[in-house]
Length: 173
Image (tube, rainbow, N blue to C red; front, side, top):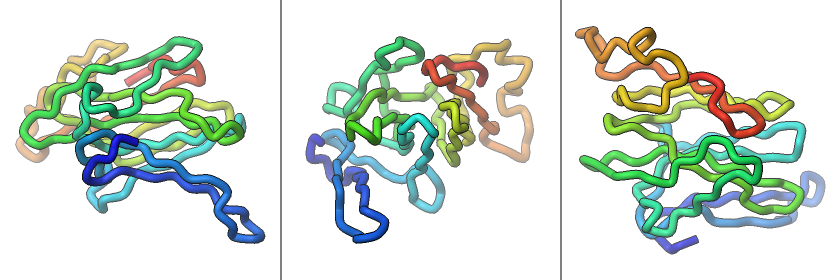
């Protein structure tokens, strides 16, 4: 928690007593805001005791946004730039049992990317849906095969679907 204008928080309550069990902030020195057009963030859990949280930040890595490479390696992006007021999407993983951050990464290209949904399979595969105007995301297939570079007059952004394995590797984008 770096004390920016807006930060996210996570909290866990006991289901029966409704007592607060723990809470934490996540954010940098700049503004964090919702990742969907309704201004909300996205959450998902797996059967392995992990909570996945995605949102958007204007805090760069130098602005103390909490970034962390996964212990098993895998995808990690700690470089970002905020251009023309756009935020940077991030994905963070918390271990619910230890209540600690275990992985946190930026996910962006130069044209702007917005996360709209997250789902997590029981075995820890993370699926992220959203939109992007970026043609330089870390594609694992030929980007021109799927990305038409906004040639359609009806859309200014492309649909985006990402699968990240339990080992934090991008299986496909």
